[in-house]
Length: 357
Image: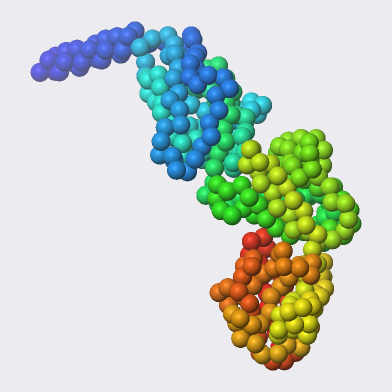
């Protein structure tokens, strides 16, 4: 019995050694032989992404296979990064195993470029490549440059950094993070609006993000702007300005209107003929006036806020909720002495208060 047991143990040991040797002999040697070759998209391909097409395919990336010296499973990853960043912070667009293509959706590409700091609704330069991996061996494809214009469902803003900021109460000069902003009508819109105080004549820019990566500058003709031009925009005199800009590439317009503000209406001392002027405070960024009003009922009577002593620009309160609308309904009043405050510092969210004294 002992001899039989010893024989079985020896036989099993021989089989085990034989299997291990064969496994080693049959195991492929992994080595980086040939890198993958990215074949699509072509260099310079431009993508204008839209939330309406979020689920659609933005691009089908294709490549020629990498060679790792044998029949092995190759893991592929399509990567994207900002142009010139040498793929220090790559974002993944898609992955595949031993396949030569991957479909990337609009939503996926949009999220990737936004993560890389892209400016919504503005074209940006990016680079893509394919990473191939087997075990610890990695090979990268050629790099292809593309242009991507991403979107956001947030309402776009324009920052207004310039040499006026410190004197005007907006932090340090040429600091986008503390600069006032203009805001669009909604996501995907290009018409911006807002108010800015300039303590003196000054130069400024419009930036689509809180940095100087991209900017809108002075255009070739009056009332126009230029994307990433070289000349600063200018305000010629101190004042409180309404600034409107349209960044639609087919328009690229800007207008600046110097304003002073007052109240007018049959509830005010001047009636409907004469404005009662308000005073601007750079510290609070609000206009105020203390005035005695008479009782008047909206919508036919009351008061409104009016710029420059004419009706070209005026605000009322259509919903009687403290929020102003351009050309809105008269504001009803009660009799007494009031501190009236007009706040135009939050673009497209203009408000007022009337506090009895």
